[in-house]
Image (tube, rainbow, N blue to C red; front, side, top):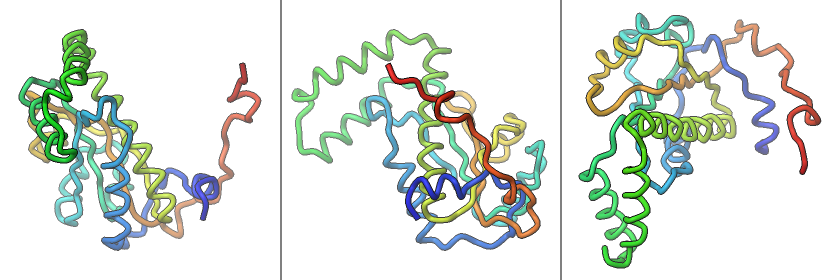
Length: 208
């Protein structure tokens, strides 16, 4: 299946069949998220992967439309940072140095650019910036899942305080941005038979 066929095949599943995703396919999807585009490479987010059935069912009350949660194989919870401090940036540069075999001095211009970016953003702008970065990851996860022929449904309809409490998220430094349910579409999910409706190309694309 090529990527256009995969995008035509996928839809936001409303009910899964409960079957578990093979670990190889799940790991491929997660690796696509890890390799996703990230501004400055800072990756101001991380993923929580909920696969234990009892834990998934425990999370049901946190969702406004729980059908997908009750029947999915896995939940990927995207958690974005609300603040990026000096220690986080220091750890990032230590990782670059270890991976690339370079010195901090060689990275000084890059470090300066990042410092300027972070000093320019207000706390609210930084939170919004990190949140937007996590949505780029979401797109990568959805695309990878479709190529693996794994169904998905991105979900924003949740009670953030309740979900963050269930998952022990540190509310002082991070927040849950969005959730992606994964699994296999149920045979009786009627949405799989609907024709995909999108803007026609001439309404969506303008060449300048």
